[in-house]
Amino acid sequence: MRISFHGAAHTVTGSQHLIEVNGSRLLLDCGLYQGKRADTYERNLNFKHDPRKVDAVVLSHAHIDHAGNLPNLVKQGFEGPIYATRATVDLASLMILDSAHIQESDAEFVNKKRTQRGEEPIEPLYTEADAEKVVTLFNGIDNGVAFQPIAGVTAKFFEAGHILGAAGILLDIEENGKKTRLIFSGDIGRNNIPLLPDPVFPESADYMIMESTYGDKLHNDPELAFTEFRDVVKRTLQRGGKLIVPAFAVGRTQELVYDLNRMMSNGDVKSVPVFVDSPLAVKATQVFKNHPECFDEETRKFVMESRHPALDFKNLTYIQSVEESKALNERTDSMIIISASGMAETGRILHHIKNNIENPNNTICIVSWQAPDTLGRRLADREPQIRIFGDVYERKCEIATIGGLSGHAGQDLLVKYAMGVKDSVKQIFLVHGEEKQAMTLKGLLKDRKLDQVHYPDLHESVDL
Picture 1 (cartoon, one colour):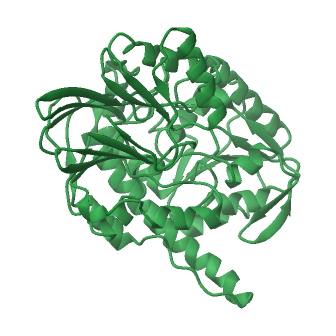
Picture 2 (cartoon, helix red, strand yellow; picture 1 turned 90 degrees about the horizontal axis):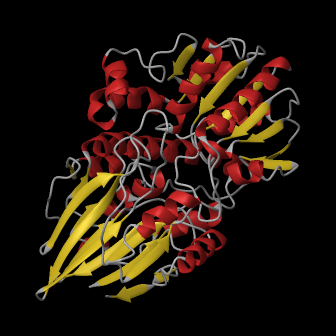
């Protein structure tokens, strides 16, 4: 058996891990790499393996850095099944179609600028037609139900607690009479987060591919993060400004709306219009309602009755049309705009940022980890000048960062996750983390006598 780490190695994004066993090939995730625009296009377009020879894909969850390159995989010849939880199937179907639409729209917008400068036009990474082909290959599987993606491999999903439908992947593999258990963590969630159940921790594995995104950082208690976010909202509204929040349309957006409803209902901040400017978020709301099995009993009841704050909020408006989105930037009253994408790389959030970044009354609030070289990272680093769509803007607005809202496990839970397999594991592979974070986590595990930890290079292959 061989594992090749074709994504999320020495970085967080672009999840893609190829398992070769019994003459077959199984791909765990197929996500988009996010970083410098000049680098991402080529890196996402060109696979280091032949998509035509991949027999099946098992998908951990719907986020674009885990599922967003499936259209390219299919475009380049993959025809096999794609397995995921039922909620992930529904969300991923929406998200890759939305991603394709954004790719096409952004390419059209950028090409207008390129034409004016006498430059050659660019092609979108993939199209909506490519994404539609992916949707036909999805197979929904419930957590805990065994299935065989390829010969000699039995797989099961288990709760990850990261976003709706997110799962860890357990593979029981038999090759030449030898039995091996491999676990892929996907993205590990947190305890006591609104809307989602706590993650399930593994108890035994021979090998484990595990995320290390926050291997160097302990998260604040979720309630402290709520307080910090409330303070950002309060001072922005006191200035009469707009609060602009880049946020993933699924998961983080619902949590933010939940928090805003709490603080406005409690009278902690004044009530102002709240806009979720993402057609995807509207469709995702229905997915939430369709999958009550993903929540605890209390949340399930609220969702089914359409009373949950994340789905039914008096001051909340879901924006769908481009005209409605543009109209927000013509208004001068205080408001809160939550818009995709979470790293401010594509979509309507770019227009909201460029229209509001030069007003000192406004705030851009960063609420999740930002990949290097993304617009979100440049904002989080508080660079004085920000380039958007080829134009340079002076950053005069406040930049606020709220780290405790992360949907990823902090250092303490990552250590606990790894220690769950200490007595059985032969090797843990740390992925989905930059070097500092991964090496810090590796050191902590070594201190606990868990020495079999490796941080693989991009495209490195390991024979087991």
